[in-house]
Image 1 (cartoon, rainbow, N blue to C red):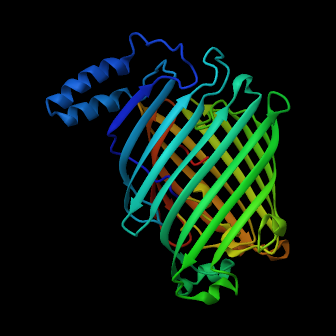
Image 2 (cartoon, rainbow, N blue to C red):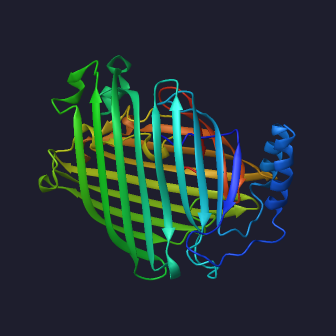
Image 3 (cartoon, one colour):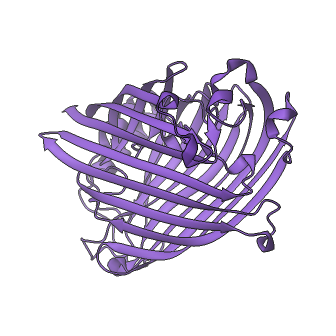
Length: 392
């Protein structure tokens, strides 16, 4: 939700690798040449020429120890409305001599919208030397006015249930994985989520639960990964099973467990065309708080839906997307998907399946890193979203 950051690019830079003291300057770097001219442009007051020069070089190959870029621009999503966001993203390697080691990535982001949403956070994926360990993390703090329709498909479908409230959210989710073999990893994972909500128009929708909830979970993550590039795979498979426990002895007022399953596949179908598919399921057991229910539209899935309008104990969802390179740095994508939220397996109804389909534009900001604009159609109303990186 807080990744809706796009389109006016204001600055970019490369820095030395903080892990190395012997890094040497790179000769004949196209961006370095552009930077010299850019300094002249800025001194002469021609900012637009400087921005244009920077845009032309952001996706050029660079032999930098830490390839970092910044972008600032308008943002939009159904949940947060029109806003202004910025992000600084970087690609780097923990061992530059190992050409087979995947590039690690980190993103710092901030966003503010007309609806009153304020957000700041950091996320990253680290592939440690020889790819023996992986460290993934996300930390974000955000506050915004939101809406709640209730729990279950029927309450989400009823527009009269729409009730406004305000909240402050803190999310911290790291995991540290150990390599089993070249494709499989396993390790501990944590999930901390604090939601402080207030100003509810309809408290009855909380079903008697607290307005403010702290959920602290610990568990295990198993991952099978053969993707060629994490942020924008052209081929490979990704399978993840995450089992989390939220016991009362970790300070949880609501004790429950959750099982999160994800499978993604990527195939080249013809020149410039990639067929991508993702299946996802989240199952909750026990005394699940309203803040931890499965939600349609979460994590960038089911594009076009207002995040959290449809929520229940469990969700199963899937999307198929065709990504096609057109010319230069331009591409398009079309997708179709569906989801079903339900309280238990005795209450899965085909007529309650929620559809999602749409079309999007892709512009390659950095090599294999796209800015995207997606127009999603849903059971309720269409919505536009600006994002960086692919949806999955």
